[in-house]
Length: 343
Image (cartoon, rainbow, N blue to C red; front, top):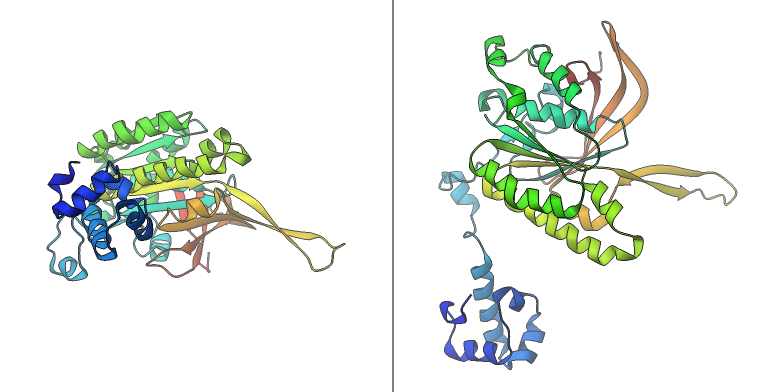
């Protein structure tokens, strides 16, 4: 960007050029004191420089709560949710996944993370009055092959899971035609998918849900322990792309994450240590997600009809609009259903 295009006094513009600052983004990388030292400007001039450059980088003006209440921002659908397809779990999430922001679903292998992601890929195709967004889903696989057989089973059993939806509507939806699958074996191919293919599908209205399964696989395999700085840099680039797509197209983003063991030594040195799990990728990644959910496998088994399932629990770890809470659930032929206390 040309410095003359910004609303800055000629004196500030000349000082910036003398300091050989080439872009507004470069200016924002320095603190106020560093800019004073580089440019020789006063503190008030530096504050003006930072304000103007920050406004130049912003894609759209900020939105106030009053504007949202008055409905003056039609591009921002406040409160819109994507239903999970189960009333018990939707109650936990106050309607489902928020359309603006990144939601992480973590858990051990076999906890039911992919099952829930597949269920959302079907739910998004229903009209809004039935909890969907009337569009398809982009499913990005980074480690395992896409579970097509399980998806086909869920499609066949939709009338059992979604008894709230008229059978005629279910039969009219061609679910498998609206799920777009990408396999990315490394970070480069993942970046190509997020920067080229995903925006194209979203701009054409073909998809309204983005799933990454899983986010930890590539970052764990491509970096060694001492490469943490480069790993964090790549992680921030990745999360920035996800947030941009979510906000630009009002699209929910679901990232499935692995877990890592956390050992807590007991007070007795000779005694056993207890183990728990924590989502992978640490604090650097945790700060990039808006909602963190965790799926756990419990010890109990539940039975209904001719089916039995290990009991699971879906928990809200943190979210700006949700309290910490959880609901029991089980995986059946038709999908994941919440389990009530009387079940």
